[in-house]
Image 1 (cartoon, one colour):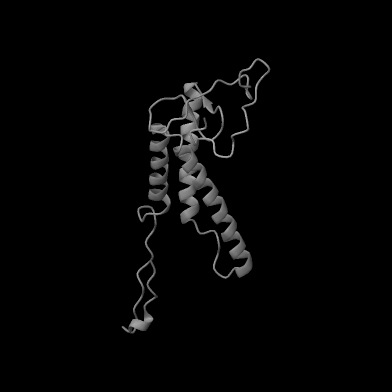
Image 2: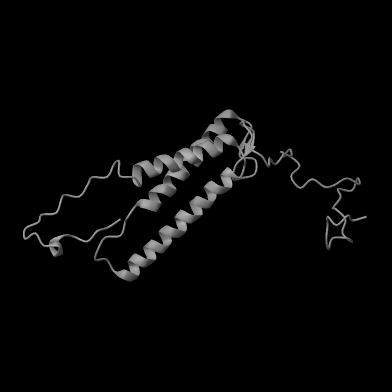
Length: 162
């Protein structure tokens, strides 16, 4: 009986390898359990099948990669590469391409976090936090010089910005 778990799949049977068992599409890969809750450990699959594997060095490399992606997302969120007075069409296209790259990288960080590995989660948060500290907060920005008020009229003041 189907028990309602395979709607529309009633007449289909799983592929076999000739011995009655299910075929193995990746004969040299062992099956890893997909975690649905946070876990600690280096044995995780992050972004790509089989990566980083079971070696500690590769796990550390994966953590550095996720951290760098998160910092890069924050840099792209807060950088202004378009100069004032540039062509509006070219500036709009560059801005759109940068937005697409930023969103793509942000989704890669999100997919890495969906591995439910606690180390990946922590380095993603650390990368976003440090990226915001360096590029988005006021800590490392030089304050603009105070406006010179010559006549005392408020019309001489520059407009407020966020």
